[in-house]
Image (cartoon, rainbow, N blue to C red; front, side, top):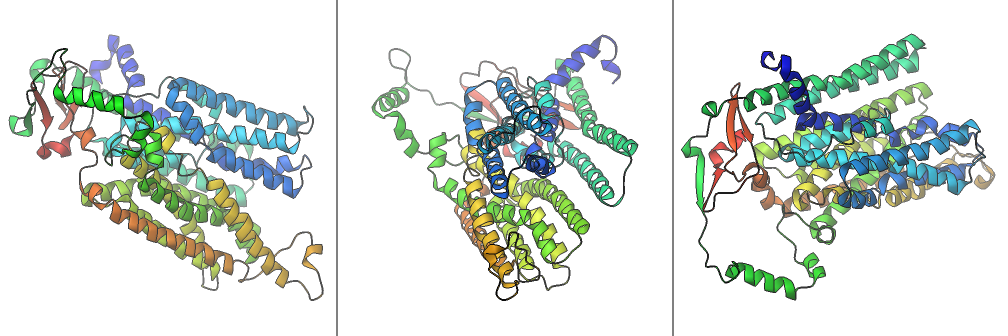
Length: 583
């Protein structure tokens, strides 16, 4: 860093905060603050103290899910507003929703009616959709050829933290945006380092959480652990600075040192000459203009582009591919979320100690994180090396999930509850980045802010049907069988079931739903096989070069710097396939 000392410190710092890697770092912190939806169980008891009955608490929990899952409306707003405004709206909604709940709990305002509390919780849990969606969309747009890895990292960190969501969003509201400062061939290696640091954070939080369940930790230990978490969260900043140092030195190379790729790595594409009519229009342009005048605006939703090209929102919604993704999400994520929420009743029914059940749920949450980050990395590697469709990995995930559900249905197998909790947590998380990556690859990134949330649009209803109407109803029926003869189940306030039979029927049905989802995903993989056999990232790797575009090398790596400029009128230079691995 010798060349950055002195008068170059401020320009270098400016480059860092304006760079893609700092935007990723900011997105990671944003996602760490977007996990408030997942800590509802930490404060729902405080809400219940206000005097709400069980029916009211169920309604509040339902609207919590409604607020978190109706992110498609956040996507619509993000499409038409500046990035900073989306972050500001999210921060305002987060503060407004939770401050009203806090004031009610503290007794500073009268007890809210049930509909008011439902409104507060829905607004508060919907707020992270602004910051989370913006962080994901802008990061994928800045690193399009590493989207599986990016999605896994960002969606995984949501599960680990819920740190100052309002403050973090306001702090980085002008940092995360579309950037095209260059492209590096070592992006995946850098993201692996981010991955290792996130694993370190997950392990540390897991150890501290388990210790807290078995040991009374002092306030000093809590303070030191909080400081350690903050340090781990800011360690990726060192990776950002390291990459920006390399970019700084590349940009400071003199023109004589610029390494233009050899001519055998460039192909020349001659543009066909077209006869121009009066007004400078070609025959093709005149024909297209006449067709555009004749075709109404809504006709485009039935005239879909090729897979991988940018679809409009209606084109994506009405496509068969989106219907497949929708079905897979209902079968897979709906059953996974239902089974995850039933881990505590399952442990109690199997007569495990309450503290052990709490530890199992904590570990399942950590495995949920591992599922997200590992599926993002593994699906990206399988796609790069063997051109395997992400739908194939989704089928494997749902097959594993079905096996985990069967272990709950038949807990007589030794260690079934422990293994099932690991499988359920892992497969719940693994589905998220795979689904989002498929949506971005099939329908493009232009309207990704809206499309990434469409698959989860009916998740609250589906979870309500699976959880409340199926699982809890069958649980109540099994609990009624345990009552002594002559007792009417309707006279018992809180029915509880004990034994291996409590969840056998319900989880057998959930396993069947998961297996159906795996079959649908396999059919979807067959449908999209030809698309994934090609180069789905070609439009991002093969860039048109203007006169200002340069290739430079640093520490054995090739850096591509793209600048806007006037294209050569008759010739375009693009990278040949022999150089794709270095883009």
